[in-house]
Amino acid sequence: MEQSKQIKRESARVGIAMLVLGVLLVSANLRAPITGLSPLIDSIRLDTGIGNASTGMLTTLPLLAFAVFALVAPRIAKRIGMERTLFAGLFIIAAGLILRSFSPLWLLFVGTALAGIGIAMGNVLLPGLIKREFPRNVGMMTGAYAMTMNGMAAVASGVSIPLSEGLGLGWHGALAVWVVLTLAALVAWIPRLRLRDKSAITIPKRGKALWSSRLAWMVTCFMGLQSLLFYIMLTWLPTILRDQGFSDATSGWLLALMQVCSLPTSFLLPILAGRLTGQRGIVSLIAVCFVISFSGLLTGITWVSVISVLLFGIAGGGVFSLATMFFVLRTQSAQEAAELSGMAQFVGYLLAAVGPTLVGLLHDVTSGWKVPLLLLLTVAVSLWLVGMGAGKNGYINQQQESIKE
Image (cartoon, rainbow, N blue to C red; front, side):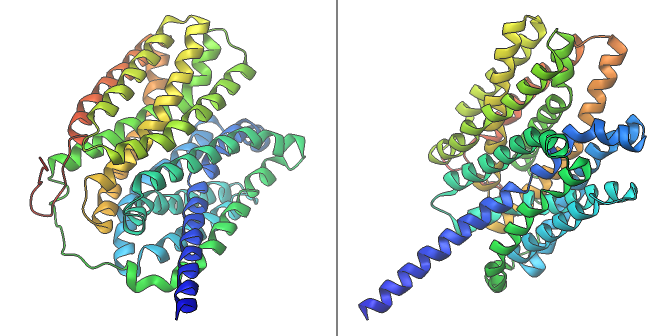
């Protein structure tokens, strides 16, 4: 009898360990296929002869896919379960990565869009899955998920050129490499497929309740504004630094260092947020870091700009994790968390898709970075304002919002 109980306990531990591994492997696939593409843009453009507008679409397509399929993923999960939907997302990512590594050129665009669709499913559903499977360790698992995602994003940014030029794989081979990571996640996720009945949660239809909720919109705007800041900086920071006198190599290294600096806060802040009854203090600290960062870049002083970049990385890692935690902290079920995640990411990635273009236009019109950086300062203040609402302790209900005193 005792031996039987021991076997069950060991089996449970193995199951939890496999689930954690599966979550982390899925997380590793949610940015690397995109950030691994960005450093290769110039090589692709020179090799294929496509124009700047077409190459710009390679970064815009995934963001549009993130937005559109953010609303679709929760509906699919209702029908077939979170596990199966996540597996389907991984399969779509793998298909996209394989397709975009082949000729003709149109397969590059189709494959990139497919990868974005698969990533969108993981973006939306992982917070809900973590809420359901790790109710007592939501902060730690959210931190591990965010740190793994950001860490692999930084690795992909750094190794794409060495893979393409150093190992002689070319841009086709450098793009195809990341399918190995996706296949590993698919294998790790196979044991979860038999849990369809457990994960296909049935809840009453919410109608327009979520979209009419003030708290849901605060969380959504917080997610949207932080996405806007991140993708603008990811796109334009190297150019800003070059215009301030930094070399191309130094600008690239600072961009990579910015992403590395995001790792500690992306892991630690969700743990802290999960232990607090309200997160307004964390929101204020993040907003102050952003304001100081953009103010420092406005000075144009070399050493101040370096500190500003590092400060943005520290705040940027924390703000994404906190936005993800809000999906969990402001809802009462896994399905509700997935729906709020879908709403917030739909709006957030639509904003992110137009942000870099808008900043580029402002730069062209004003022939400088003062106005764009002032815009970023305004966004940072707006982030603080909506964060004060999102960080207030409470839940989004189907009928009304209940605030815990």
